[in-house]
Image 1 (spheres, rainbow, N blue to C red):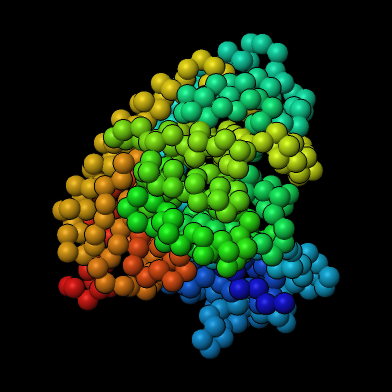
Image 2 (spheres, rainbow, N blue to C red; image 1 turned 135 degrees about the horizontal axis):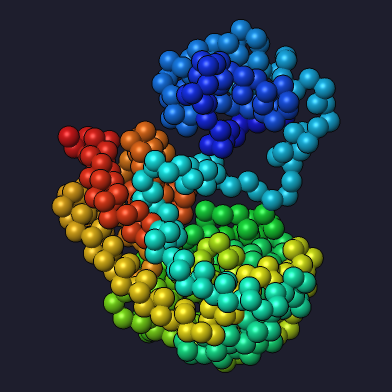
Length: 488
């Protein structure tokens, strides 16, 4: 088996205070990984420049380290194929090892670019211009500490929760959803280990293999493989400034025999578009006529910046045709890993059964903290403060784009969420732009993650990078775009 994935070495760096030269430390670390079977034969090493950046050393140090490994026969250069772990001496005695199965499971691996972003986001020296989470200083650390301290004085839930999740949390969520117009009894809510788990449970427990999901194009769903790994196909539909265009929905649904429509009506990821009330009504009418269920992703609906969005699709649901996904990850705490899905009781029970077979329930401690967070009104107060901070950052990013990207790209002002969807005036090779930006200390989310054919878009986030990082990052990004587009 050939292994082509790049290696993640961000968890180790050579020690500059060690008496052993840096190149020798690197060579020794690589040798242990190869001979121990962690890096199997055929695995491709990152380019020398990327290795130097990851390990915080000069390129000449990498050259010296790789030279030692080449002399030992542990790595080999291939014409046009970079440097790989050699077959001759690598992984002795590992025949039949777990490395032989690394690409054989039914779950698709992440896109290589997504894998790279997931690793690189933990390198503190990078300016993260695309990250889809609030910056640590925007999270409610002090309030959450107070809640945890108060809970620690009482009896803690150290056992499993019931299949639907904590009743206390489901009651709190029922009240929270009611404020947005969604009527969902606690028995109609399933607690998830983050909203992403909802996609996995639905694809495994509700959708026939080979079925088709309709969705916006571009979409966050194209960057993950929850549906595709279950043998489900994706069919993208176009958008305009008001959201998903309903005109082609009937033809696409009939042609593909679609099983459901997945949509992000409030502050869409990655475009930031807010679906207006008229489009939502039209969508509900058309899907009802087609008998097409809807999976509504409400991850960003609390993060409005100018005015509250129209009621969710689930608030208009009179027939049990909408499943509504929500999460605390985009507002209160990604680390709590608390999400939920609301829908018809029979469907929720089916998903709960699948969840019990996968992880036996979300963290009992996290559920208790989330329940207290909602009951005490902390969520509403925190969201008000978070909206103010995000509004300031959004306005700063728009100002910076006007200053540096005029004539290079076009964009719209998002009314909420985290993202500005930047459209370049000239197409550029987005993987090349990603690598060039990385070399300059910028981490980007390029449009081809959300639409494979895209060569013009970037998802810029104002939620994570600090104001000073945004100022440096946008100026540097504009310089790179100008250079790559032949405009300088």
